[in-house]
Amino acid sequence: MATDPCDEANELRKIRRALVTGKAASEVDVEGDRIRYTKADLPRLDSMIAEADRQCAIQSGERPKRRRFAMGARFRPY
Image (cartoon, rainbow, N blue to C red; front, top):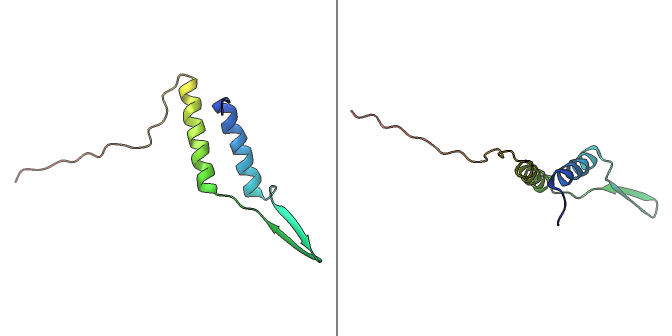
């Protein structure tokens, strides 16, 4: 995919909003019974948005947010 990561992040946010608000739901009518459902992996979608935001920050010359931090430890001599 050779798209702009900033545009991709915006599109992914629109998709997430549509899924969460129910606008992306599918309806099936079987013999008078109406079924409405959506299938989405929201944690995966959130990680895709975070990655697109990270790539957008790199492209625009900013430093991306750190996802992991070093853990420090101190020892007291007795």
